[in-house]
Image (cartoon, rainbow, N blue to C red; front, side):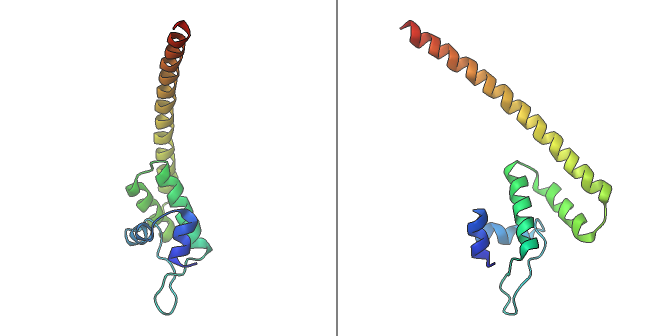
Length: 118
């Protein structure tokens, strides 16, 4: 797939895809003889993984380290630790969001009661 096709498929800009490759967030993408990126299934899986993680707020630095360890085929324990750390952060964020939603629900109910009285 071309970078444009991948950009459309994953709803990311081509600049973002190039940036992610340049900083090591996704492994180097295979290229055609003319130098144009040719995203294969593996490259697309990396894009999907990184998009999912970034959408959830996972830190770029953690992902770069994870990708580097994967490419070197080393650091199994560290890779697992990175995922565990990021999962714990996401759980904390989810708890904060749940608490905020509960507070908003309470406030909305309060206004509903006021509207009923008027």
